Length: 312
Image 1 (tube, helix red, strand yellow):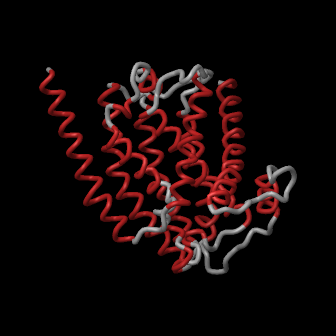
Image 2 (cartoon, rainbow, N blue to C red):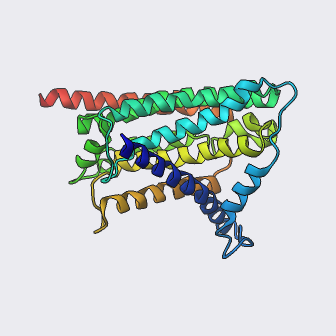
């Protein structure tokens, strides 16, 4: 029991550090894609910049909007951050002390709860901009969760397991992406929409909603909200690599190192997409999932079911 607590605590500390330096990775990546330098004043090449940002945010005065509902206002960032950390319990390391037998179901349950953190933050702020941003995020997240759950069935059918470790081991000979490239593309676009990232970042549309659902947050609350967002980006990159690029070793690297390289690649693609595409119109975003992704996922699922029954 104590060993599990220690390993969980160590994991959470590593996640927070990874998220902090992922923000630097994003700012550097975006800056070079836009032919500029990015953060380079703090320390050597700007490397301590995330630590300086954290110190600034956590030492600022905590704002208390006069008309806000205080309890949910302060609970929302903590709730979102806690859910983001819980998903990292599913990390399939070779040094893990325990594994979830029904890890995929745990992932679906926890990721579905993420919408409540955004809802609480927008409603409790008592601001029309925050409320509109949270309503947008709720509609977007619920819509894309439908297609995400359907696409998730493809690797489950191939691996015949709900355990992420067994899904990885089933791909030792051949990655699932070679068997279902269209489904993997739909999955990744759905992940971008699920995490409210550009070009689907309608919950934070600064042009019309100022800053969206987090407009009334500053200092520690703001830090927790964005720690949760970036932790979700990394964890969706992790699940993308597990579901479609599994297998224990890759190019003579150890299993954990190969997993880190795959997660870093997917995280970079998140940044690359943000730098490449402008924000969609909201009606096009909703039409994409209900008129394109959902029928495509159902059609592919039907083909797989027909193929499986013909082999019996």
